[in-house]
Image (tube, rainbow, N blue to C red; front, side, top):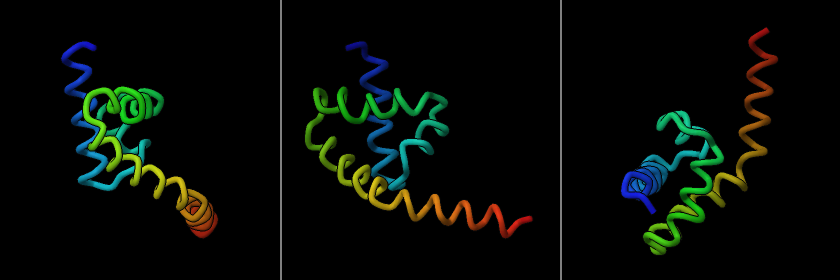
Length: 82
């Protein structure tokens, strides 16, 4: 794996852990696609630092469990703004 990819993977993982953010927000912050972020923190991170990957996985699972709530709040805000 190229060095710049490893650096990006570690930066993404640390960003997600520190900010407890979603894949979508991390992708926007780093200017890359959601697919790339997901591949970095699930597949590539496992090869680089499995312990860090477990920390990221906890946050991703938490986000997955809460996404229906965030979606409902976004829809509610959209219709209240009209």
